[in-house]
Structures are given as C-alpha cells and as structure tokens.
Amino acid sequence: MTFNYKNVYIKDTSTIAGPYEKDGPLKKYFDKTYSDLYFGEKSFEKAEVKLVKDALVMLMKKTALTKKDIELTIGGDLLNQITASTYGTYSVGNAFVGIYGACSTSVLGMIIGSNFIDDGRCNNACVVVSSHNLSSEKQFRNPIEYGAPRPSSATFTATGAAACLLTNEKTNVKVDCATLGKIVDYNQNDVNDMGRVMAPAVVETLLTHFEETGRSVDDYDLILTGDLGVYGKAILQDYMFNVHDVDLSNNYNDCGVMLYDLEKQEEVNAGGSGPVCSALVNFSYVYDQLKKKKLKRVLLIATGALFSPTMVYQKENINSIAHAISLEAV
Image (cartoon, rainbow, N blue to C red; front, side):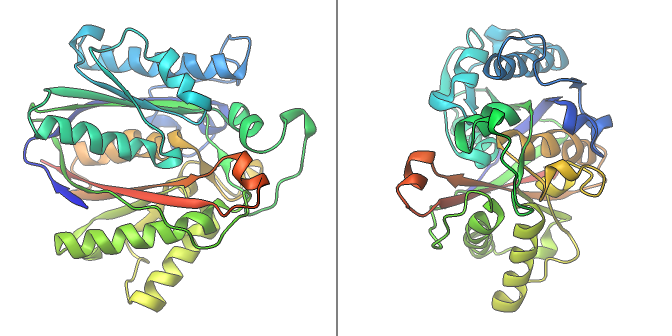
C-alpha cells in the first residue's frame, strides 16, 4: 500500500548516540554522544528513557518550538509496553501514539505522522525512537551477566535515540511517498540471524513500491535498508539480482553496516540493529546530505523482526516486515 504526499516536510531532526555509535564512522553527524551506557542513571531502562528525553530536548532547541507546540508525538522502542517512549515523551505534545514495529519503527512512525499531516488532521508530528544495547539484550536474548558468545551472524542492538519533526511548512527536505509493508514468514527461527529473517520483507516491500509508483532502482540516488547487517545485505542483493533482475550494487547500502566500523569494532558482529539504528543513520547523515542536495532522492526501507522470546521458546517462526519512505531534496 503506497501513499503519495503533497504537503509533508521535515523541519529538523535530532540524534543522541551511545559509546559504540560514538566510535563509529558517523560520529560527526550526531548531535550528542555519551561515553558510557548508564548516562548517569541507575539502570539501563532508565538510561534509555533519558536518551528519549535528550532527543526531544535537542529537537525542541533546534526547531525553536516548545513541548506544547507539538500536536502529535509518535514513539516506539523495544522494551515491554514501549516504556522508554511513554516515560520519555511524557508531557511532550498534545496527543501521543505509541507504536511497535521493532527495527522498522522509525519509518512506520514517519508514515503515520505523514498521513495525519497530509490529510489535514494536524500541522506537525514528532517521531521519536530509541533502543539500548543492554536493555534489549537482557529482554530478548540472554541475561547480560551470562556472557553468552554470539555468532558472527548476530547483529548488535544500537544505543541511542533519534527524533524527527514532520510539518506542513515547506522546508528543504520533502516526504515524497511511502509504502507500508506486510508481514512475511520465510520459515526462519534463528534469533541470532536477523538479516536472514528480514531480507525477504525488504524484497516484498521494494517490489511493491516499484510496482505501485512505477519507479525503479535508477530513480533513487540511494536506497537504504535497516537493519539487515552484512549477511542480510548480501542475501538481499543476491536474491534481487538473480530472481528479479534488479541490480542493487551501485546505489544501495544498509544502515546496520554504515553505523559502525565493522573491521575495527569486532564486538558489533554483523552490524547494527534496533529501532534507533536506521534512525541514527537516516536522521543524521542522510538528512544532512539531502539538505546539502548531495542526495536528491532517497528511499529508506526500515525492517523489523516481529517476535518475542515467548514465541521463540515455543518453536514458532520469526515474522518480519519492512516499511519504505521516499525523501526528496527540495
């Protein structure tokens, strides 16, 4: 399902990054970074709430708006009951929509906000997402004290928060169109290989987007997925070329690969993941390149693995989804 937008723009963004992201190649594009994983708080969950608050404070500062100027706040994270978002966005905006799309949350939030604005339901919408490496590891895989070794195919949950303010006021970056994805099940059940789980969802959404818009790979300066990591990226490229004759070798990359220096930061394994992973790349580097018109049109495809430890323990497959949004330099 694809939506075309006439009157939706990005007013500004904010990005707050953790210590591993700070050591990555995109450091200079982040608004604020931390050198430890507690950020002065007593738990990792409270630390993630602080990240959300930091991102919103930074966004308010950059847009010269107050909390009450925000008409709609859309937030999501990986914690149970999206508590980082609900605690972190308290008192910001006049309405709140909590969403869960796993690692696809940032683009899903942008699509929801863009629909509200383009339909004239509101004038602006703030989208904020977060994740924390250790709070996520504790919840989804093993207790962090356990120290379980991870295979090379495992991705590394990014730590940070990122926010984006959508508006009907014309700016230099326009939200052009978006394609909602559908849930896919390709018989995968390895929680340590999210790239293999999510790559099929990208295939479904990308082909749908091309079909419904009449566009092709060549219509974009950059196509970005997030977060397939090294192995998922390779699977996607191979499948699209050999099965659908679509060449992604020239203008395609993955946010999970871009966020870290994979040669020097060996602890991140196959690359980044988590709701904030693609947002840290898209709301910093990509947004900067669009503002400077070094990129004219970008397709962001955020991916999500829709599972819980409970379902994995019951031997169920891991479903996945991907949502796409097109941004243009005005």
